[in-house]
Image (cartoon, rainbow over all chains, first blue to last red; front, side, top):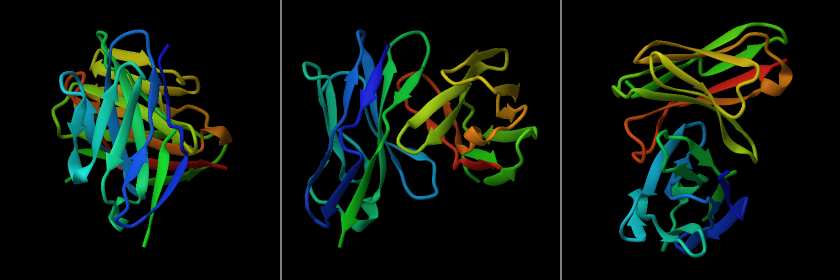
Amino acid sequence: AQSVTQLDSQVPVFEEAPVELRCNYSSSVSVYLFWYVQYPNQGLQLLLKYLSGSTLVKGINGFEAEFNKSQTSFHLRKPSVHISDTAEYFCAVSVKTSYDKVIFGPGTSLSVIP
Amino acid sequence: DADVTQTPRNRITKTGKRIMLECSQTKGHDRMYWYRQDPGLGLRLIYYSFDVKDINKGEISDGYSVSRQAQAKFSLSLESAIPNQTALYFCATSEIQGNGYTFGSGTRLTVV
């Protein structure tokens, strides 16, 4: 079975500082990896995804993530955060089988402090 | 209009009542999903459908049922609501595996 761990439930960071949100997954088969963002009172929005190829993927709003197969990690980073980045961030895994079943992590709440 | 529309946005219902949450999409996607979100647990899959005649249970389907009325419509029903079904419910669609999901804005359900 697959699982997703997000090591930090809450991350406070000052505005314009860098941030890293950590994600580790467990799977015995190949996976696709995703990061989603949820702003208050909204649904989830896809930030970026890793399917194959280059291990560094860039997404919207200046975010990027790096896939590390040996460490089974997919950490999300941004070099300089803004107040508007305050949101809940979810890491997700999809197993490369015949169906598209996505497993979500518990989420990390990012709070950007002015 | 939103690509994925969920109705109602908020609902308070009493224990034992039947309730239906509705989802419609204009993406033209075949794949549709229902998830529930609880604090600290992330999103958990209730049901998914790959076309009108293909409906499958997710990891937490007990107490729920679904109906795929058309490619664009996927409804979730709670036959007899109970308080631990209080949660935020999301409908999502996808085109092909690996493309990611498009989510609706959610339905906040409270069972009292």
